[in-house]
Image: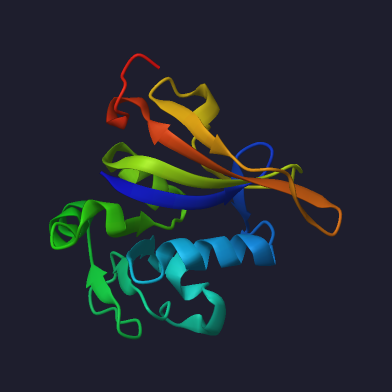
Length: 171
């Protein structure tokens, strides 16, 4: 029952042509606060696109790639979803954060019980999307922050939880 962390636009877009849609310092701060000391799992392109071009400091980095002899800094490399899930058993579920990209999010969403979603109130041109949790009956938003701003952008820190992981199922 892991976590995932994602920044989406008004249409749940997460990227375009291999790049993130927007970079918001407050979102980066929240990401760092939530994942430091924890385990992050991402696909190769997502990990290679991280600031500094190397693994995230202070975290256990796991990279999922189909490339056989791939190495990336001090990251643990796994080559399939099954191998990733096997490796992740070594850690506490609540310490695991799925960080993208699109295919990794979709593959691991069924194993997650909490999603930290930064929602940017703007529609970008996007070619990759995160599943819309507002339209998914299995998920419910349990936290919505006050409006945050970055220049003229408005955004919100939200938390969604899988309904069957909540103490009270009748929600």
